[in-house]
Length: 275
Image (tube, rainbow, N blue to C red):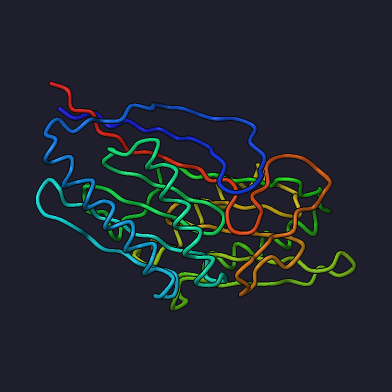
């Protein structure tokens, strides 16, 4: 009988960031009993992660592949936010694969997402399946907005949630004029292995799950490994290799910002075999 264990951890990647808590649901890593098998699996995993990190930036920010055979076969994918450069995409994925593998190098599966990229691997095939077991949201230092302005901005995001799945890259940005309060900017994206209908469901689930949490905030993010939504009162999306969403100094909370990636939620999928 196998038991599924999940470890979720908030950690820092980059030069600085703000962390208000670390949640450990479980932190057990499984040691593969056969050292030969362990060596083969780890070699396959390293090959896969290197491939994804190097190829996603060359393939419009998305790459998936499988490496190995039998019990040593590993499946993985990585994707980057559609507005960033290939260099920023590589840097984000490369950072993403290094820290968690040092903490739990023999895990059989992992999902990790951050403000600019997402990564997932497993010893079981999952391509085309939406990850909906965990997600995150933050509004950081975004100030409070006028409720009527927030309502208009959130309606824009809901519209993005229905239009993103129909885009060739499952990525789209939007902007709405809110009069004297300026403009509100939005971005939505899904991992390109999922279907259009699953993409829409994924984005809708984020908006429904976190609307109360971000209500009346001028900026926020809702993130998962299969989709994400970003919103702000300043234009944060660009095609620059040093993308820096500008934080608002007022307010409170946790904001994901910096050159490439600052904070990421990691979920290690660890399998424990019980007799």
